[in-house]
Each structure stands twice: as structure tokens, then as C-alpha cells.
Length: 307
Image (tube, rainbow, N blue to C red):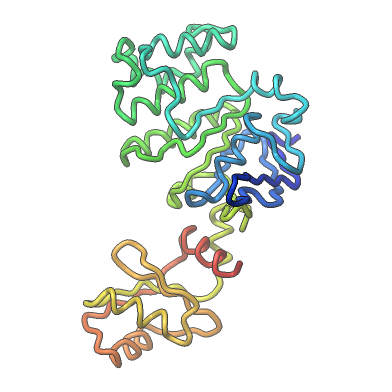
């Protein structure tokens, strides 16, 4: 039995001026004890799908299950066996760290002591501040408290909606290490993120854009399916470089990536000297061109261009 299934899920939002299609025919299966990532930019549909699976909103069309239970018919049962951490910090800011945790434990008829072992690795980092109001915590500590509250009733499936947005790099690394430890205990984790670099930390990922799934695979398999050659290119005049590479007849795409431009070539093979010769005609200097392996973000950009 799959931990999560989606069959033909679609969702639209209607206001006075327009209809926005948030999800379009989503079909998805997540295995038990899998760390599954929903990867895409803001507005791609990640939160809508997460909220449907967490029984917070209804889909317009389609069927979804969590731990074998229907998200519409069995919503009360599902809420007892999932943990949900929304993208925006939603705990009681006027309550202390300890009071928030005790409150959420009581909602599920359990106690902090009963399930402390599950949250120990996380909670021990904020326990010295247990009497501090939640609203006065740093971003990283808020994140750890929210995760502790989502875990305190020992859920079978954990939903995390962009849990590392706005959190510093060190806290992001620590957070994913915590997720790996939870997965090792048999928990299914469904996490959404706009950060492409976090995709490689998942067992499998679904790339989503404009409410459509572009691919569902392991990060390694998605990278292996990149079509053509990929080059990292730099020159003294980076703004002019982007324009000239985009206008190259053999280029399928060129976009900024950190301090370089990623150039994709499909249909033929070229060398660094070919790039140098082409750019030299336009007066470029200090040209650096290196062939590289595609990242998940490169694959995402290519899949988007094929839409």
C-alpha cells in the first residue's frame, strides 16, 4: 500500500476577475517510509496539493488517499495520523515553547513524556529556551518547535510545506539531517521546497510548475535524462554574454546560475574552443567555458522550456 496517492487531482481558485488553475491533473504515488520532495517555485501549486492531502481544502476533481484513507471521506481519521507543518509559522506566539508543545500533545490525547524519544534530537536544541515565548524565537528555533509539535503524536505521515524558507544555511542543513533520522524510524515524509539544491536530499522528487507535474523520479534519474551538452560560461562582460549566448543558433537555452551562465546545446557536440571562437567575434574577453553535469535546476529549466 502506498502512503500517499493522487489520481487526477485538479484545483482552481475563482475571484471576481479571474480563475486561477492551481493544480492540473496531478497523478502521484509516494511509498511508505519515503522522503519525497515536491519541488517548484512560488506559485507552482505546492501548497495547494499539500493542503488537499492534509484535508484542509477540497480538490475540484480527483481522488487522493493518505495511509490508505480517502482525504474527503476519512478526513477525521487522517488528521489523527498525520503531522502537518505549514509554510507560515502558525503556533501560538504568546505561549512559551513548552506550553505550545504541551498543548499540541493534549490535542492528540498524548503527553510530551510519552513521545519525547521521537522529538528528543530536535527538542533538545530548544529546550534551554522552553520558557521563552514562541514569538520571540529565531527562525531556526521556530522551525524546530513547529516540527516538534507536528511530531508529538507520532504521526505515520509528515507533511512539511516549505519548512526551510527564510532559514539560514546552517539551520537548513540541520533540518534535513533531522528529516533523515525521522525517515530511518519508518516515517513517510512529504516535503515541498522552492530550493532546487534540497532535491538531491530526497529519495524521489516531483518537479511542479504552473500546477502540472513535469517529472517524478529520483534526483539521479532526472539528472541523467538531461538532453544535450551543458556548459558553464563566463566572460568579462556578463550582461552582454547572456544576450550573445541566447542568440547563438545552436543554443537551446542560456540562463544565469550563480556567477556564471549555463549554456545548453542540443543536437550536436561542441568544444570549449567553439565557444571561445563564437564569443571572440563579439569582442568578449577573459572567456571561461567548462562542460558540466546537469543539476536538478538545469533539468527543471529544460523541462519548462519543453512545455
